[in-house]
Length: 435
Ligand code: GUN
Ligand code: ZN
Image 1 (cartoon, protein in one colour):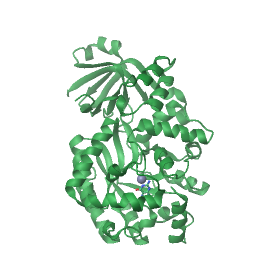
Image 2 (cartoon, protein in one colour):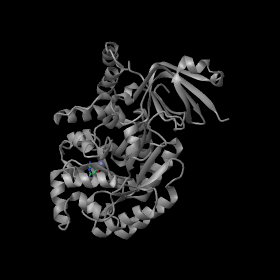
Image 3 (cartoon, helix red, strand yellow):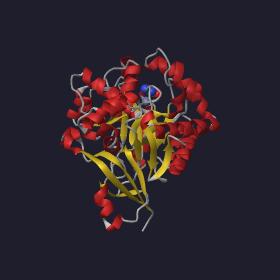
Image 4 (cartoon, protein in one colour):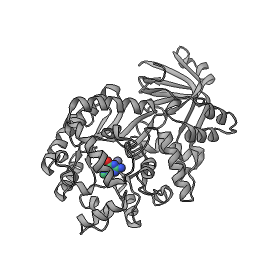
């Protein structure tokens, strides 16, 4: 028998995909007991019923009865070296990279800067209730060591990888095809599969890699079972035109990655805004994931991702902050903007669909659903304790809501990091608002 503990609170989570299975996949238990054994879920149910059960009679119960426990949020795409350039004014993607991003990323060759930034970054995720993510580091292998070192200390379930880029960026930030390959392989051997950590092969985007580098990235993905690929595709119209010039043989931007074996079930592509129907079919057929980054897409003026069309085409999707092109670490702020972007396409997303994308949907997008995403028995207990009275306005709005879905929507639209009372990783407190 392992270490048992329990938490008493309202609990909400998704049991399945509301896009395909309908809104009754949302389970809400107003007075729930969440019972953990050695950091994984042993039981979830009505508090009084479980407390009356002799199996659970001598549990240490933490009383969070005025709060809502939700699964840890899952951010399917963001950049830790861009923490300090969040909210940089006035440019679209290609100029924004030159003016703000590359100068910031140059600093990550300095190990102490990388470590300090990584620690701030992981704490900021936890403050926002995010417990898993697929994260870009910088081109420097030591930036990956720094993030994995901090992630291991906190015990977050994350993926990251060394950016591969061997052209069309400042010389200081360039690797070579062979160096990028060898450094990536070394990092995979050092880190992939240790604890809750995964490696992601990380070609920045097609314009900053030669054909040879993309080929070697595909080889890393093929040769190392279980590693991910993360990159960007079809974010900005000028970027799309540039890719067509650089790869004149390609049928489309996505086709460049396809050609080098970089699509698949563990491949996560941020943005996916300017794609054609054939690209969506190819993404569906290969199981490739589109990471929807609404705050970034609005902030950089990139365009509107069409979540409904992607889902209708059978494409796997996740939601993502894309810090620092995105403007918030909060998946609540991100889901709020996702709702507005969907409104622009005339297809509103439901509160349950938004909540799914932040939790179980993100876990499925990152192929982590056997570990995290909801409170099914046996899953790792990553969760946050949320205060739906954290601001006067949210408290007032939630106070007049008639249904839980109405409360959930107000929480998404009006909530932010002020709502997070505490965040737990495998049942251990990793963040507390008042400590
Ligand atoms: N495309 C290539 N690199 C980046 C990046 O760092 N951020 C965003 N939003 N798009 C990119
Ligand atoms: Zn990005």
